[in-house]
Image (cartoon, rainbow, N blue to C red; front, side, top):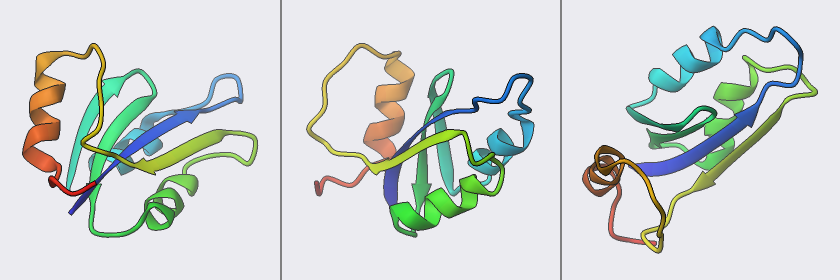
Length: 92
């Protein structure tokens, strides 16, 4: 299973995040990193993850889905680092 980073901006005023967040939480694993930034686990590729999420977004919204890497650094909550260690394979 691959861990993808998912980042989005819903650009329409008053946009409802409920359906998008429900879709994110329906993946095989998920972790909320920041307000509009998540990690999700999927057997599919980045395109498949993107297609699942796009159906809950408007055409003027922004979305980035990218495979994560073990080459990383940052300042995050310890629980997020532990989640990554548990869900991410050692391959880059």
